[in-house]
Image (cartoon, rainbow, N blue to C red):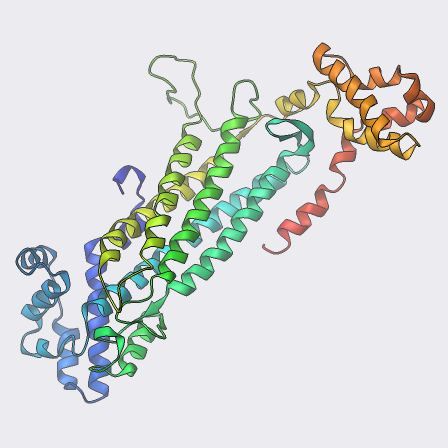
Length: 433
């Protein structure tokens, strides 16, 4: 992922220094377990911890010759450890190091993403309560439907990202497994207790059966979860993009002093953050299919998954981390225009109350078919002429026969649509602080 869309903490997880540190810890913890079992001298295990060092440039130079990254690392490590290095990597295979390391990196990435989601949830909750009773029009098919509140829009997003957090916790738990089982995963040359020791030290679970590689359905589930979260990011970003349209202008992204919207048109205030989030979401989702295709490896091991994961591991987590941070800032600083919301709500002359009138007419004795035809006829006339639905219905003798003027007027009360807002908020926010 390019630096423009990277944040330091997440990017650091995928830097060579962190990767080689994890490789070293895997090897050193394995040596400790081997020494405890009497397979290697205890002095050798101590020497690995005491003298173990690596140099990225030197590893790269060795790999150019060996064309094998794990061997290059072990060779450089041996240059520092000395004779005791012959006991390193006893009974292990490269996948034991690579797969266990990737599990650690993905759990580290998941922890940052969980923290990102916590920040986003906090911002959504604050703004939702701020606008709990700010009325606005709800839209279906992008057309005015019935009244809602802007707080309910944000509460919906909160609930969606709360589910995302639960899914990510489950994905983190599933990906956090350790495999130190040797060639084809049979433990023929290494005791399973070594794996258990390394797993415990790294905060991982033991992979029940690894076949030499950790099964890639785990990874597919992890990246699929990131893809779903990215889709939720896009859903909220798309809502902001629509609300910022000039003809709507119910909310807009913050526009900083000195910010420029267009190289040609000085008046422009574009939803660039939301559009950027839409693009990043596409990138993250695009990495889900390769992760799914990695599941079908040949026999006990092949490396067709390796090149894929070297790209999507960093790129998907870095992009999503950046997107969640950007979305949090957008929501925290979103500019909301309640007056415009009310103006849009009223622009169709009360048509948004049509369902309530329909129901009232049927409850008063009119057939549903006739009630629908009556309300729709006046609604279409009001839509075309810009008239007032209440006034048109009040002048209809058929309506006047079943509804008193006071009853009809009450059907256009905005508060009626908001009476269960607090109930919905309790449902959404009681499960989390």
